[in-house]
Image (cartoon, rainbow, N blue to C red; front, side, top):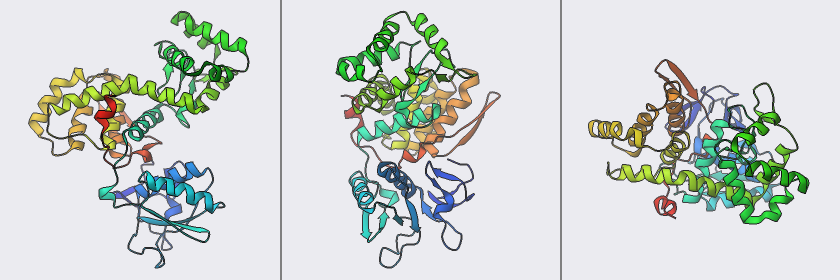
Length: 383
């Protein structure tokens, strides 16, 4: 997140005290009594997820584990407290099952949390990996819960909604709502304040795209038209809160961009013996597909670099892929494309200057990018 954070082999070892490590935790919360810091970024990420699942503040009580816990786990273990320790304990044990913590030991009102060996983190499920990719990509364009994002006509797309910002101009918003209606129209209708508005919205969706964009432009708010008028914004956010429709949005993203990811992996399988399995690499390739589409324009350049450089691991191979695909974008967007993908690979902002343009993209959801393998992704993508 903040560029002032100093890392040493993925351990946070320095930086500004007010640097934000995750949305809810700053660097100063992990300082030891001597003013120094030594905590692994995977532990902070796990703590952030626990905070989100717990739904209440968590206080870091002890950075250096005491003898009653595990003094050998310096930087990998932490003692925390909260008002509802029972609930915190339950949520922590759920995260143990998904591999974010290796143990959670309670002593009274305190909870000791420890992560697995960072060099051998548990594998991530394909479904979790895809959800991560969707959220990380959404964070480049929006802030907050990606399923509640409603964006006005700042970019000529009319109205955009959800984690992959389906919009009226492209027809993707219309496709998404037809899927939702097919899933459960009664629940969809209940998210609107009244039936008249529900029917009016469908009249917009079923009409021409040009008229839909014009309608949305009139309802867009703010100097840049990023905002959108109520009650429509409220209706869409009510839809985004429904677990059923969140699932529809995620599956739509899977159908639309999962195939692009599968195509990229197939191309690389025929080009190199190196297998792309790390979550960070896969998320970078997914983001590439969302922003730039197919990899085809860069096939020849990628082949040449792979033959010349002989990448030694999946990170080097992925870097070649995303860099060469970025260079095929319109000149003004090349630095932006490359900075986005390298931000995902490095899990921190990366400055890129290319063709007279400079970009340094950051991502508020980079803590989701675990340094973990993903097992069975290609089978998952194949359906």
